[in-house]
Image (tube, rainbow over all chains, first blue to last red; front, top):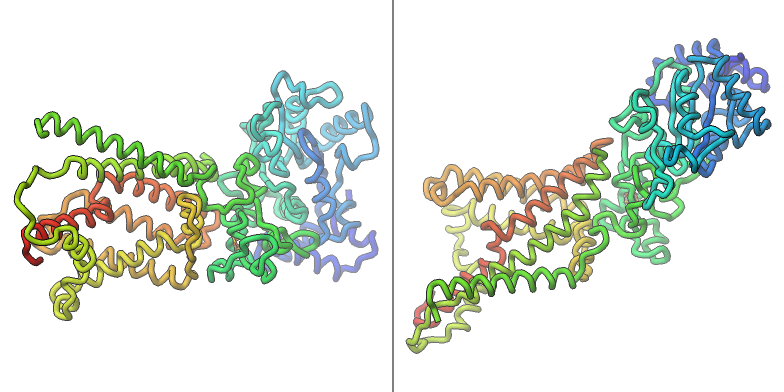
Amino acid sequence: MHSLYEIFKRNGYTRRDFLRYVALLVSAVGFPPSFLPNAVKALESKPKPVVIWLEFQDCAGCSESFIRSTSLLPADVLLDYLSLEYHETLMAPSGLQAEEAKREAIERYKGEYILIVEGSVSPKYKGVYCTIGGKSNEEILKEASKHARLIIAVGSCACWGGIPHAEPNPTGAMPISEILKDKKVVHIPGCPPIGDVMVATIVGFVMTGREPALDNLGRPKTFYGQTIHDRCYRRPFYNAGKFASSFEDEGAKKGYCLYKLGCKGPITRNACATVRWNGGLSFPIQSGHPCFGCSEPDFWDRSFLYSPLSVVEGGFGWKKVLAGIAVGSALGLGSAYINKKLRGVK
Amino acid sequence: MKDVVFYDFVRGPLLKFALFVFFAGISYRFFRVVFLGLPADYAKPKGNPYLMAVKKIIIKPTMGWTFNEIFSRRAINFIGGFLFHLGFLGLTFFVPAHALLWKEIIGISLPVMPSLIVDILTYSALGSLIALTLHRALNPVLKLLTGKDEYFANLLVALILFTGLLANKWAGGGLYIWLLSMHMLLADLLILYIPFSRLSHFVYYFLSVGFMGWNAGKRGVSF
Ligand code: SF4
């Protein structure tokens, strides 16, 4: 098994290129510069990580995002380095051969491989909604997680249940952590998550041999420790009280804050505003669309994608105000009447 | 509990419940007082009671406005009270996030203020509230007039101002949503608490001051 350095060399890169990318990786993972020598040593000597990637109730969007990560490692190196032993969308074999390859990989790399899960699990009716090669998704997950060195849930479906879990959740979809209750699961939520974040988490694990520091919901603190709002380049407009009121108005053209259009940046923890997408090119807010908080649990069910964060969910409005006043006045009138009666006032 | 679940609860069902209780509670108490009415008084009014009631409501707040009164004898009450009310009401209605909420509740678009003004109002309201509370606790006369109700209300309002300040100023990292939820939870509690406490003075103040003016008008005396 080749190390990252050997793969760089094989693809025609110089040692200088290798060092440059390692420096980038170290900073992306959030380690101090003093860690650089250790990182270089680890990536020169440690064999490339073996990855088994399972897909359950998903759309393969996380896989799409993953293979488009180009900022941290050159594309040719990336796909060579992360040895995807099993990945339904990307691998060539299919059918029984594919299942056999997975079984073999689990056997051969026992206790060494990284298990990545994309999509929610559906244990309802013995897994009838998601069965692969005659096995229920729950069974496959339990089997593959048994000997995994590290388990990563990628995407909001695997982390929180995601869109399959949205009301009325007909398939009983749930996050994988509910099935793997006794195991530690690293969560990389997003719909999809940023490819570079997935790559940085895996390479960070190779560099240190440990999983990253996680928050209380199991997300790497480096990438999910801050809200989008904290790092948003439109924040000065928010602070100045300058908002776009529609997608076409003057405010929108001037790049004002998108809070009024329903931006969920203030309650969304993700790295979109810093790492950005497509090789650091842009992210939703930069392209003029409010953040709708895809990396937070149950974002889909919150059903207020385009209404400002501070408004009452489902609305309140005049009718309810008047109803409150009517009820209160009736009670006031009633109680005054009874009081008067009791006191014998005419 | 996931923070966003709690967040959705305080900004959704709890806020709606609080608002309904608020409008019902305020109108209950208002109409109860009005319907209870006064014992019949057959004396002929000596002046114009309604005009005097309106006059009293309008000029009462400025009646003590002498230099001496404002800046020396009752400086804390006047300056602190003014700054606190200005800040608290200004923040309640014109912070952008709040203005959008009011739009949803009463259907009227309110203007919004920039963060700098928001900050100034918050610091001055918070500072005045602390000064007013200390004054209450230390002043021998006010001490006698103050009960648990006042201290609780002051604490609640101070916490709302403080969490609001943090929500605007503090990056907060992963704890930010808890903080924002706490701010809204406390505001929900305040909305629920107002009709049943002395904080309802924002309505009854006008009623009682108006009554005083009306009474004076009826007797043909000045106030
Ligand atoms: S666009 Fe969204 S994230 Fe950016 S400052 Fe406005 S509310 Fe915050």
